Length: 272
Image (cartoon, rainbow, N blue to C red):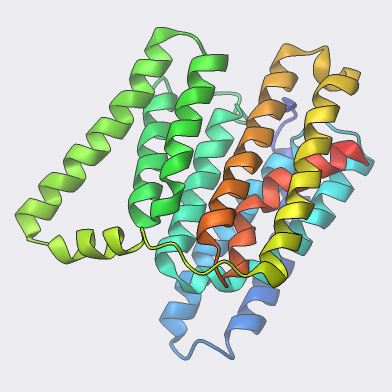
């Protein structure tokens, strides 16, 4: 799914899109955020997330027309949901999952030998920040086992998860920060299901999911290349798990749709 084009080819497109995004997000949030430091903190986290995902789209092995569609869909989903970055835990969780997904999709041609260890740590930290994403920890483990069968990769991933949990427990005991654990446990509460908008959202995402599965086998550009097929499947499963998360944990927070902005844009652009 991803090309080996030099980064220089996309430097100016990424820079241009980032400048437009940065101006838009600052203009949108400055009316809500009084602290300039807090505003730039949100802008930094959201900008880094945006840049990473735009790079993923631009490096995708699509025709230019498909990339334009993917960028358009991504911006339509991402920018209206940027208010989610005002919640630091969810904003950082989104950034960490974006990095982990990029690593799992092999977008970087030269990756660290500890790639899967890093993926395990990133997803684990994300789940400690926002409980529902703990399901993504198990999803990425499943994807690692299915598509990356080398035992060292699986061992690294599990080690990353275990090390993160041990360090978190040690820090909690040393700093006596048990209130954090209480706050994390409180996220186990399942909010009220809002039929009026959760059902339409889940239906739309389910349609995208179905078309993604159909493309998996009907689109020869996907089905005839094992690497592209496996990467496409990761995106489809990632979307599936977020549909399940939305069904139980979305409540009235529709801005959580930001988490599916990338998989929906990439899957949909292949179906157009």
